[in-house]
Image (cartoon, rainbow, N blue to C red):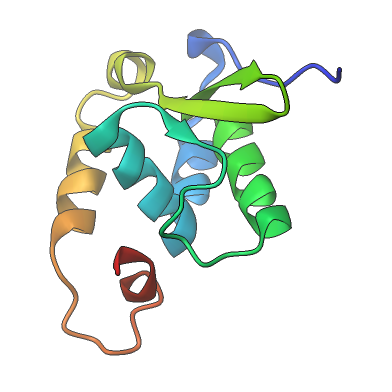
Length: 115
């Protein structure tokens, strides 16, 4: 099995973290982990191709936002909240607070993910 790239807490880079959170799908995945803990690689309510989800999970993992736990063919992701808070105090909390505010725009791509 291929090893998964997961940076150490001291190697987290703010630009990489913000880039990873700039996509509405990845932001929604982070919101899922923040509210529900560990998330499977294919959350049921997301209508996104598996290959696209894999790419989003890889970007989140390589940026240091998630820990990935392989179990057989499945993967389970957990938000690295403590590492992110230690390295960038308040950033994740602020981003999640902004992401929780409902959008009035009908063109909000993340809206279709929320169901």
